[in-house]
Amino acid sequence: MIQQQTILKVTDNSGAKTVKCIKVLNGFNRRFAVLGDTIIVSIQKLRNRARLTSKVRKGEVHKAVIIRTKNKTVRKDGATLNFQSNAVSLVSKQGKLIASRIIGPVPKVLKKKKKIKFGTLSSGFI
Image (cartoon, rainbow, N blue to C red; front, top):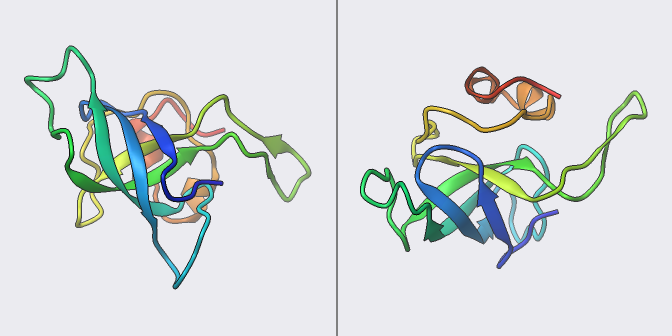
């Protein structure tokens, strides 16, 4: 579960390394976000190699989709799913991906939430 002030890793090639959650979208006074939800983030750190060619700048505000969380997620078939870290992928204001590649697999929850583009840019679904 992701809430305000949570530091998250960025798992795409947009140039950002870490971001901080500012606001959880989709609901009035909503406190937590789970896999597949959209949040608003502020960029905290950039990758060293990508400082000059980065598509984003430090301090900018963007939308992001949650791809991985440390919190366990239970599927309908009884399988549990959890990851080592909390991770997001940056999205533009119009809802299009900023990056051209996502590092690592993404959960099948994103397929159900009509974010199929994430699966094509990643190494596959879990």
